[in-house]
Amino acid sequence: MGNASVLMVDDDRELCELVVAYLRDDGFDASAVHSGEQALEAIRSQSYDAMILDIMMPGMSGHEVLRRLQARPSGLAPMPVLMLTARGDEVDRIVGLETGADDYLAKPCNLRELSARLRAILRRSMRTAGVNPGEPTIISVAGIELDVGRRQVSQSGEALNLTGAEFAVLQALMEFAGQTVSKEALTKAALGRDYMPYDRSIDVHVANLRKKLGQTDSAGSLIKTVRGSGYQLADRQV
Image 1: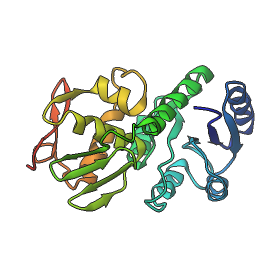
Image 2: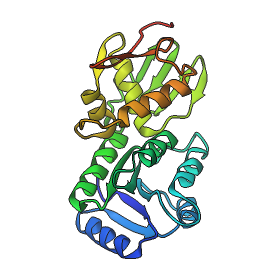
Image 3: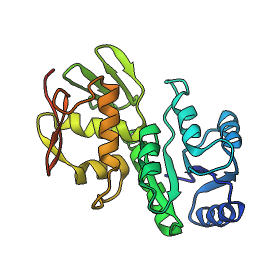
Image 4: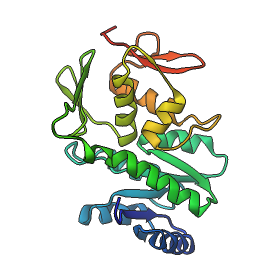
């Protein structure tokens, strides 16, 4: 993974100093800014491998930063985002995941857990770097074409703009089209961590995928909910 570059965005300067120092000691190339506006300026002038983003900030909120990130040109690789939310605030978590965050941690967070979550989403986002050029990298199912190497997805020839987590969920479902993929397996594939009871992250990522595929209800969707088990991608158009 090397010295992955991480930008922390939080108006709490003391927390930023603490987290940045810890991450640097843990092998990351970490830096911090203290507003949403500064974050957008930073990513315009430099490339980062991941972002730690506080949701509740004065001025431009973390949700607005996420929306701006999603509006970037589709040719740019999606930047993994780990959002920080107030403890117990499920609404912020769901909205953040719907807007494009990959995963979340509640404040105050354990720094070791923060580092582990970062490494997990970075491993997931970088895993295609080791794809063997001699192996096929394109998966086609039910009118959807997913290019693993280029990290591009199209449906009926139209490009889809997916976050890194959404891409990983779709890839896992396409690789096992017609079979049920458990939430545990999808959490490992998309977030690089274990599934936790009452964790709705995968549910939100699947809901986002349905919207982007133009199929918002489970009954008529390519992605079926298998109650108590997980999700299944139909191996043909429905």
